[in-house]
Image 1 (cartoon, rainbow, N blue to C red):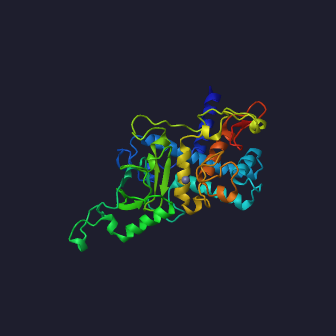
Image 2: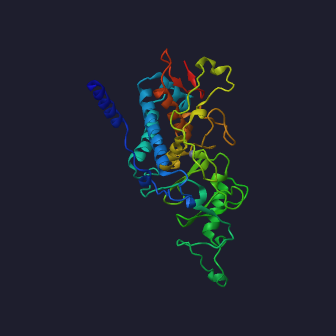
Image 3: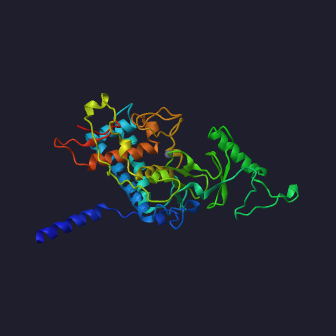
Length: 368
Ligand SMILES: [Zn+2]
């Protein structure tokens, strides 16, 4: 009995040292759990969001562990990092390893403590939204609103409302976004209820549409308006744009690995499980936190830009995460997020009888 109690106390102590208390989501972000209007997160609920944030933090620390294990010649860490970050010229050198561990640490430190973000250029509190409806889609023919949200007369044309298109500043913002995003039609203005300012973005189809109207669009981060914001879409939470009913939260390692032997990666791969099949809900939040904390410059790879596809390239970008070179991978948030998810299984899933661990360096779930 005594020894049992003693053991319990010891285990409890170890667990409390390992589990860091991250900041409450309502302190890290301006986020509204009381409504689904104007980007509110009522359908997600605060406790769920706090858990997803905790998962993102834990994955960030696993990323740091991945780099230190690489330095200590842990073979699984070497295989994974070389495959995801330095396929052309392994092994990675000291500077490259510092870049990667520094990025993981910056993100997990921010979740733990808050503080400056956007590569330390901003120190206000960023927004966290759960739908794109913090923005209201407008046309250039709508009356312009000032910082109080009020319309105002155009003194040059007899007092009729001053329209968005009457402003040279807004016309220039529209032209810039249309050109930079290589859009076929001019980018419409969107009014932010939270910033009381306009942002220009692609159209996403009809009225009241926004970034979450895109199929399978999980989230985005913007630094154009200040404070910056992360928008997570209902797709990210495994639900629909109706934002009713429960979300489908996927915990870390809740999907059981179904490995094939490494030797068979080159042959019969039909229906083999991949890393994309086992990602937890927090993966996208971790991805967006890299954009938020490190800023756009350090999280946008050279053209053609961000890489999302694990094993094959996507429209407009033939690159894929497995086999990316260092210059691209070290600025690609999805590479960081997926490497951490992969190493979480390697570290924490029980090995087989021969001691082989679960690995994903080929993109597929392998063991032995
Ligand atoms: Zn991204």
